[in-house]
Amino acid sequence: MKRQLYTADHEDFRATVRTFLAKEVLPHYEQWEKDGIVAREAWLAAGRQGLLGLAVDEEYGGGGNPDFRYSAVLAEEFTRAGAPGIALGLHNDIIGPYLTSLATEEQKRRWLPGFCTGELITAIAMTEPGAGSDLQGIRTSAEDRGDHWVLNGSKTFISNGILADLVIVVARTTPEGGAHGLSLLVVERGMEGFERGRNLDKIGQKSQDTAELFFHDVRVPKENLLGELNGAFVHLMTNLAQERMAIAVAGIAAAEHLLEITTRYVKEREAFGRPLAKLQHIRFEIAEMATECAVTRTFLDRCIVDHSNGELDAVHASMAKWWATELQKRVADRCLQLHGGYGYMAEFPVARAFTDGRIQTIYGGTTEIMKEIIGRSLLG
Image (cartoon, rainbow, N blue to C red):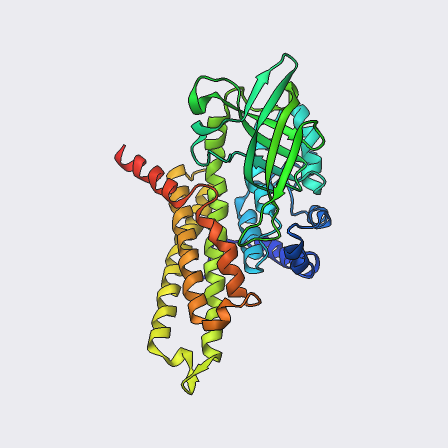
């Protein structure tokens, strides 16, 4: 089916993204994978190309365009290129909305220009060693000392954790209220007592720095409170739909790309004197994956339109997230199998896609959490 989602402007933007990938990302990506981190110059290059702060108002140096379809194009092209390590989606689609919707005018002028140029790389710190999806389990706390907060605690699995200059930290600011006693505090590079632990060794997305963060009596100025005091729960819930959509978009793009490269492979690879594509089992495998991708793509494109129009609810975002990422996982496994021994070789794109994509059903809310959200909406 011909997609009806994008206009000529979106396709022009796609061409820009592909040029950026070819020039600034792909020639360096293998080195970043070895280093376990993306060069800061790549972020500055993304800023110069206008790929950061797409939805940020022009007065702060952004693109001034809240149309989520541009973010979807960015996610699709980075996924197809096999380059998830430079986490522009995290920066633009997950952290950006917190700054644009919650920041005061003073905070916007302080942070958003650097956000758009790539000089300020961002992260959000929710997960702790003992608390993942359950916000009530958060132990990191901030004590009110009049003109500042004193922040103590630790976070783990924080994407951009090593590179980040600006970290939005979810902290407990009142002992009462459970998940409703949390606030968002912005910790900046260089604050005394803010330390980074290991750059964690993951099975995939090696170039995406994921770290432990530690806060030892960090003095956080009162003007670094983001949003309402004790209002983090509502703020987090408000922005989760876009985070899950961004992950879902990458999920279906990955599945489609894997299907493309595997279809080419089985046409060329021979076994028993003929191409694999001549075997009925192989044709059935390809047929099943193609159908699943087509059906999923139709639903995802509708969700993208609804989200761009401000009409997507948390339930349908959860449906999109769990379905697209579980499809990605299944397709990656089946495509690797169809590549045989070559699929297990790290230099083959299907092998890297298999390990890089495995996190998709975990971060941004696990598949199980997505199903719980959907189930509660239907059954109370």
